[in-house]
Image 1 (cartoon, rainbow, N blue to C red):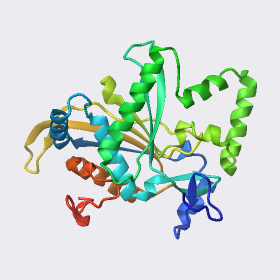
Image 2: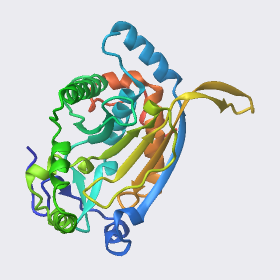
Image 3: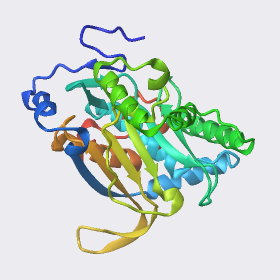
Length: 304
């Protein structure tokens, strides 16, 4: 348990910065949705495909997917680039106490199938990061789909939204305004805070699972989420060499929407390059999240 000091919140520690511009931005630049910056990038996923073939040949029953590797690579990037894990609440900057992800999944691939929301934390438990992410996602998805088949729900987020949807519309609007006020002052009840999916570091949408591509998804003003990532479908695409020739490789594009008040464009650009380089060395994700990348990349190579 991290010690809570003066000025800290339940969900984050107060950021003391020597950058007066970023400290002042929340007061003059409006809400989170008024401060969206959109980043788009396409990466060569050849090494990830080879890595998945190797892992799945060893354990075909519980298969690893592109999504597991992408989430693990994002977690590693955020661990090494901590400003990505800042959120703004009450017009102040806070460093989130955990690296967390949220995404939605369907019970089955059908138009009328229900959706459920999953929240997971990337722990520094001394074990393989990608195995940790794989196991957590598989366990939760399997459990939720089994419950759905029985007509039940063990998902706390779904239960909370079902309860709120029973409240008459005028009162629900007032309640949401009141809850936003509680978030502002860090007085949100634990029962609600712990099932709120938008408290996550990253809300990620796995568009590849439905063979879709998009470049942008908005943030929302509710809660604390500062980054939304679209992981698009992987397919063959041209990658150009310096001499103008090209090769057709497995490529994947990402759309990243960030709250620009948490860091500057230079920091975001370097972080995106580090994310790309981690995907070029997916075997590094078999290490614990806190293990340095020295075996795979020198510090000078992080951002090249």
